[in-house]
Amino acid sequence: MKIKLLSAIFLVLLVALNGCSVLDPETSTGSAVKDTVCNAPYFEFKSGECCLDKDADQICDSDEDGVVEETTPTETTPTPTETKEVEEVEITVNDACTGTTYFECLASYLTKDEIFFKLKTTRDGYTHLKKISALGCEKVFADKPKANQGYSIRTETLVSLPCTKLKAGDEVNEAEYIVEYVFYPIVGIDSDTGEWTGVERNLMRSSGTISGTVRNEPKSLY
Image (cartoon, rainbow, N blue to C red; front, side):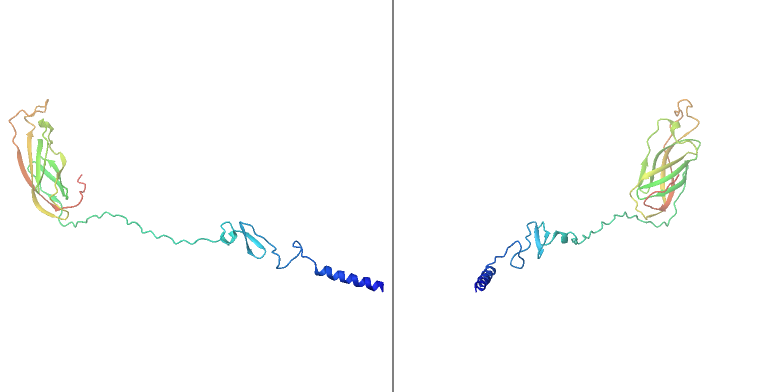
């Protein structure tokens, strides 16, 4: 009877102890206690797992590293290349010129800026050019102090007359040109000083013709 009483008391105490048991937060599991705490700059991206989130945008930085920001390429308009237009001139009249009394005209050429002559002296002495005129344009030559400083016989010279009265494409047919000059024969020139010792020489004038199509730029006449 005593043994049965003790057994009954023991069972009562055991039930009481089980009913009053307290969960230890360090050992208990389940939804009642949060297993993981993520401190900044980390955040819990899924239950029980943290990841680094420096910019606090609730996206793991490891997921942002692989994202490439798409940018729309800026369209640039190409700068047009400036080209210099060259005016083409159709050649319809051949360049030609006739000689004068004291000059042979070897060649001539017409441009919108100049008239070119290639002349050759034909007289045995010294010829001093004074002026050449053609098509309303002219060129005046400086005086030379001594007679023997002129062009001797068979001397070739290239002369250009500034002239802006013409335009590219114009045709010139046998237009007159005039050469003014002074001629000194060999006889009458002092061989030592080169001075003229004879009677004063007069200004002379002779003419020829020039033809051609006016170009933009000159060609070589040498």
